[in-house]
Image (cartoon, rainbow, N blue to C red; front, side, top):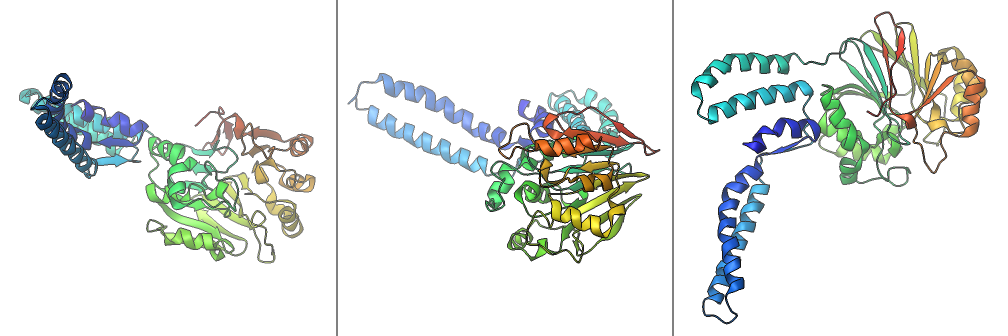
Length: 408
């Protein structure tokens, strides 16, 4: 009963719950009650006593049976792992379990009286979640030297740009295995539970800027757990062996894959997503320079996401469409590398505020001091996810309201 009662708590905080242990204890506890006194009896009897051998054989047989039973129970399909509940769903489940426990205790009259109220309360929590997006919220997550941004629109639709990295996912040449991607990614360890708690069951739009592990690290975990409706990737991405690996896994099932080969725009409800880079005339073998650069327009506010581009990409956009770079908020290119964020680029962007995705201590030294100085010279407020995830919201009148920077 205790194991069942705590299921809403374990599913909300840890994404885990199991009835296998309950079933295992039904057979395991009787076996233990025989094993413990039998083992004590064997220890007390003198060696060579004529019953010792028989008791030892009985003990070994019970241990074997105990192990077989628990291995069988461990493989039963009554265990959940990685299935996080939102707050509303956890509360709905708790109300249902409380009613069931009243019924099990034999209080049938009370259970009958509570049946309708419990159904109404649980149903309301399940079908009408407590958390609804009343404003458009932008989250730039603190995930070390890696990128993951999430925009949740007022309608409830979601846009994610990159999926973070994970332990040992730093270098592109060190491609993690599928098992490592599923177990050790930041997405798996931190982000999936946050998505579930906030009532986000799927990602409507996902932009994968390029194929470096600090940007694609959580892709498989996200696809396996939440699913994606629309996936945006560059044409260069689809021509790489790593992309073929991703598409070969059975749970790689985005509803629509949009391959970006040139500048173009998409309407995401009331918001507009414009891809500015790489343009059709831009050719490079540098994976960072092939990052998708996109601008999100919400009402009269613009947010520019830049992946890991450097000076060549910045110069290309400055030469071809500098007016399209103007934005109110800028996600700093390449974690604040000195080889990006030129003075000319910042002059064209003219952001009010810049966000850099990095950690307090990293062997790259991001963000580099000269990069920070360029933003200060341009009179741009500079914020870092090393201080915690950055969260802002856009109200109905498109006024950006800065909220606290917090560990999310």
